[in-house]
Length: 303
Image 1 (cartoon, rainbow, N blue to C red):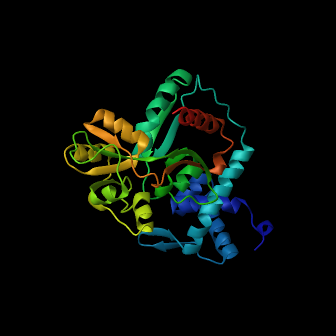
Image 2: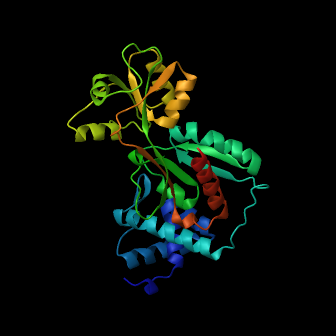
Image 3: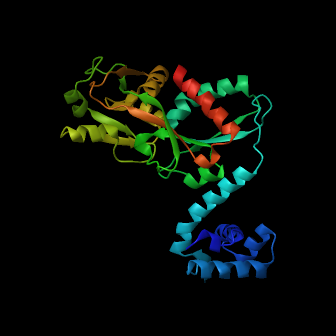
């Protein structure tokens, strides 16, 4: 299969058909007639030797071949459009731009508040929207610019190699117990850590963390009695029980100040978290995105 044998306009038709799953709506999207779109679909089917879209009672459904093609075709079209467009300038002082950041509650607690304070000085019209990171990296949303950045720990994200990634922060772990816990001093030994009942903070609903992986490497395990997806609920539980909560040190410090809790040191061999920033390389040339990353990196470096 040779690219020069394919009319590139057919890729625009393919993208429209995959997004609309309807010949008439796809034609309207490209401002062409319905017969012209049907003709384009037939040419695509011949070129790829595949039905691509099949009529069913539920509408037109893509074949596995079409699904496999679409992500690459969509990315190529976005990159081509970006290269052919005049670069947009970005003036932070006058911009009304909305940035969407997909992240976990760690970044919401630790990095977003100082970011908002900095934006009030540098870019008073800029808006930040938080999209909670789930168990699926929002790759299509990053490519299309619907999400600007993803910030999360290694533990939560399997990042494909074609996405851009920077590690912004290495965060040690800390323990939280209630302030008047009768049995725990300023530091925990490994034996004490595995003997205690744990609250497990799991923002994505996972069943284990780097703590459990480290313990397993030592032939050990801990006793998890509560699995919570919220720092606030986990802290509330610990404040009223003899349970231990293990979490990144910066957010542990924030929670200890807000609740009747105190931090305890963990064994020095415990692993650290690595906070990564992920974006799509198709958006690399966007001045606004480069500016936001710079502002956020500065805040991380100063924290």
